[in-house]
Image (tube, rainbow, N blue to C red; front, side):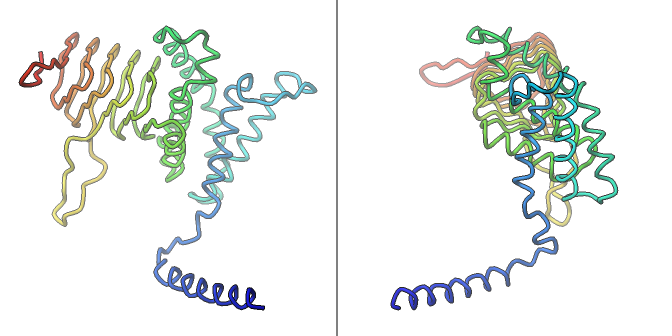
Length: 288
């Protein structure tokens, strides 16, 4: 009886706290996104299987190859439609889901170039299968490339949730608005940040803890941040950026064939073919 009385008192107290939380939860769309997070996880799982069934799929020996692909695409289409229903009018979800599905062959073709870049760029990689199955950068880039398609379609919330899922799993933070070319490789990857308005050319290699970020934020007359403007750098083709480098600013352009050394802090542009590194002397650190 004493235990029951104690539980009753606890329930009454928790009910009071629940009422307080309800009172301050005044967002007009409160409750609209219940279940979306788990839906995103399911969607990403189906996408990875649809794109790379030999690596992430389950054995279905009774299906011929074409039937396997079709089955996985149907599951992906269903997961996409359900996720899109959270953020856009229901009558538009099927069309949007089909547009993403139709883009998957091109996305996979680009991802194959990213896998090849990793295999050729890392002597520790013994096979392309190893890259696909074990490299966190591959998973982050694969999720980003699908999310980028959704971002281009102006689908709200979902692209960012997808790349933040990848961020949480890999430590690699790629905004879905960034534009990234083919043969892209992030070695190790932890701590990499790529901002929304960044552009990256082909054959670019980043190491861990690289930041491609904003130098400053414009503020409007009302004191709020101005959104939708170019804030992040442009990286050319065949560029290598080593660990810990920070490159900032919407007008900062790194030309083709440049090398940015480790721990460099860069807020100005580089002409094609240049290299910038830091050296540590007894008294100071300087650029050479």
